[in-house]
Length: 238
Image 1 (spheres, rainbow, N blue to C red):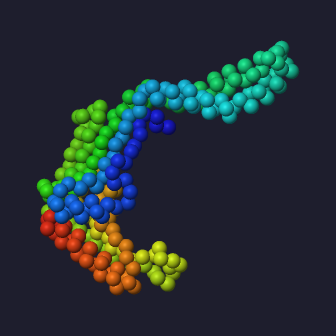
Image 2: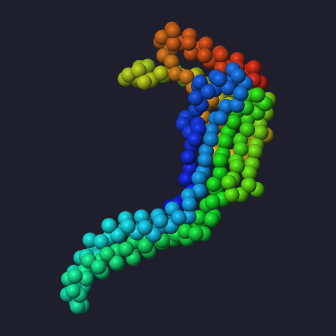
Image 3: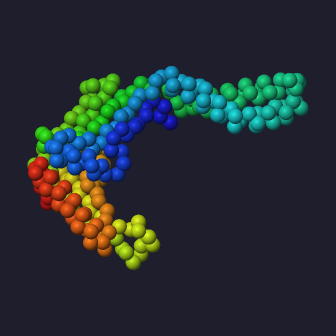
């Protein structure tokens, strides 16, 4: 169990990109934060409390009945006052809980090792500078900091239109959709798995009912607007 780090998605943790934020950034030619991940380091005190208190406590609650039964059995073979049964059972349960909690754990060493992962990772679509920027900023190890920039001219958009199978649909949840993806040329790939995974999501995703003429027209108009804005920023369709 990793006691020393905690990952939190502060922005863009869901599927795709917020449509309103995308349109605002493209129209204003500003910076869009596609993803922001903060990996926190947990204090050493919290790690030790987990290992020596909460872990043993949970194990003790589960093991206590078994040690009470064991003490009752041993009382038939050794001289053990009834008043000491609970004391022995609690002591043995806690000692076993500590051993199980610390088994295969080296808390201080693991804590120091895992602090290397404490970082803030951000993926920006900077429409003002026409760059896709991925940054890794490490809190305790600044030498590991990295920034990768991909110019818009090394990128293009990829579009997919998805038609729902209306015959198999039982309700209105089966809708048609249009998705726009950002693609990067092979020689400009980001050497960051977390960023590549986010880029794999559509930057624009819109659902509509193609049997409704109004919805179809609105979807087409919104799609045309987004594609025109991308082209204006220097990202053409392939």
